[in-house]
Length: 76
Image 1: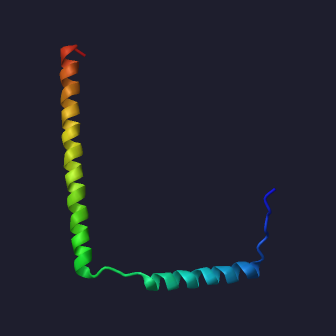
Image 2: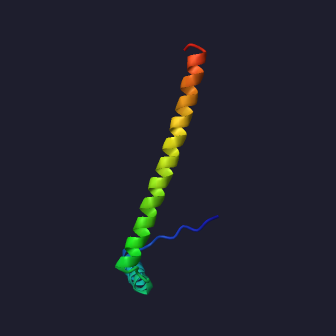
């Protein structure tokens, strides 16, 4: 059977404090992008989203045309 542990209030506070301290320590190790890298990555993401949006729109137009043509043939 699985053991159920009861966390006391003091233990919860100290473990939460330790967790926050470890998070801060890890965030200090992160290499954050400079403004030029951030601008470049943002541009790439925007261009990719625009490109994928155009592809999806073209697929939608093609399928809509096929469905309309099919419905026109069968008179519905």
